[in-house]
Length: 472
Image (cartoon, rainbow, N blue to C red; front, top):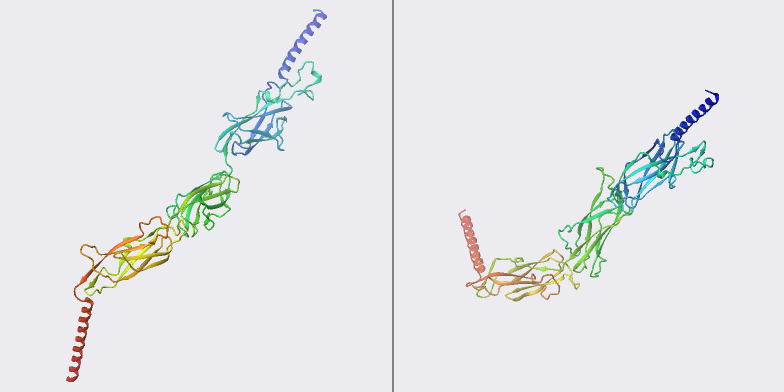
């Protein structure tokens, strides 16, 4: 073989080898599109979070590079909601500045604040899941020159231009999954009883009543409260003199639902103290309880009606009693003295619609349809009070054989000065038996016989002792 031939063969062989080397180098030279897998890890300080409605929660993410191949790596962070309902998110650095693309050197780390907002479609009680990962893209270096944007030294071949952003990279870090539950920061509820401690919603002037309620902290955070209770009248009746107190002291604290320990106190019981004014007119009144959250939650309220009834004076037939079960009257018209008792009461309020109070109540006794003596006056009769009146009576006739007895009637407020809920129970009736004797007063004969007996006994005793003295 000639030297010339050998030289040409060597040249061809050399070119072939160089071509293979170039092709191999091309396959290993890093570029940003479809770059080989990298050693970038993503960590989070949380995997679950409670997020307040209208607020946000923050996950601290840490990106760490353990890569030994690429001098720098660009990372584009992605937040994905696989359930289809996306909540607002944002990435910030530790200074609070927005982060778009992170450039991470070999062996370096970077901290990102991942913020999730509970707005829009996010409501208290909702749950969601978010996945966070990074799209990674290595930077191209031509020697020591960063050619990520454009390198004039190789622009003729366009090999060292970084033509795609990290956001378009197919390389991805590991994925962080965070489970989210939307909560309400401050919320409360109150339930009021359906009746007072008396067993219904009737109340009377000057009487004190307690109306129970239960306050519950339904919010996630601890909270404290102030309490207000007021009385209202749709009829415009003045309520200034009512005494209404909410029962719990302002500043009462309750534990939020975030505390599930056995020592947590989420609810408390209270009682509204209600004392209607002594001048309260009959009608329907409203009681409103407002509980304000000092944490900023919505007010918890409940309202109910109470009724002030009209007066209801009453005397029943059984309220009329007598000092004797029966009486006699003799032929001369003399008779036993009988005491008639009458118990009267007020089952209702102490003031009527016209403002007339249950005072100076007139009570009249009737015998045989005729008024007995003068009417009697009760100074005052409030709700639940009872008064017993009495009057003396000497029967003027015996009852007939076809009568049960002499008719006795007791009437309250005969003139209807007081407007009442029920006037039909203002009159009680009873009957008293009176018999006529044909002889004189039996009591006289009994007294006379007793006197004779006493005198006889005295005479006998006197005679006995006198004879005894004579014998001695």
